[in-house]
Image (tube, rainbow, N blue to C red; front, side):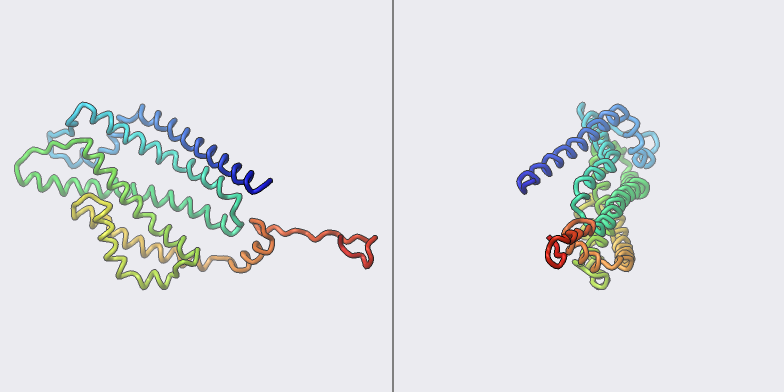
Length: 275
């Protein structure tokens, strides 16, 4: 197969795997939209638990409910289909990886999904209830009634989920950088003072403009950075002679370290030489 044919075949495979991922997302979107009311009630629990007694959320326009339920359904569909999407990505890149790269890449993908889900779960269970209780406490001081728009609540929730989901990927990024040799654990430790400042800057960018949300993102970010240092050091120590493996694979010229056996000797040639 020529290089051009190989490139085209890779593009075809990439297209097929993207279509498979999209089909699953669309199917799950339809299912989630059917149950969007129940999903929305579940995700709105932090709001309902924080509302003053006798108040209910509202929509301020006729299309608000439709667009809100669509956003909820799409997010739920993407999260549910994430393992399938990552599997398709893995199946596409795995044939071109060396054996030691496969041993690291698969745990990296699994840990990425794990930390993303943990980040969103942390935001749902702790950050959103605390943030809304904090806001409504100030509203009660004014004596005014609170009329919470569900569409604005969901926009706020999406921003929180995005910020915490992305932030909880910090340990994965550290492990990847150390594994690739771009940084060392010593350099990560030396950068602690800058990370503390950077954590609050990142929190100010990724979260809505309130102090409580920023602190509840910055503090876990600092702790996750420390966790990433520990995990990166553990992975580096567990590496099994990477230099020898890479040298063997480079000599073979094939992923997985496969070797090519020499041609058998031909007894008809002078001295029993090889063909």
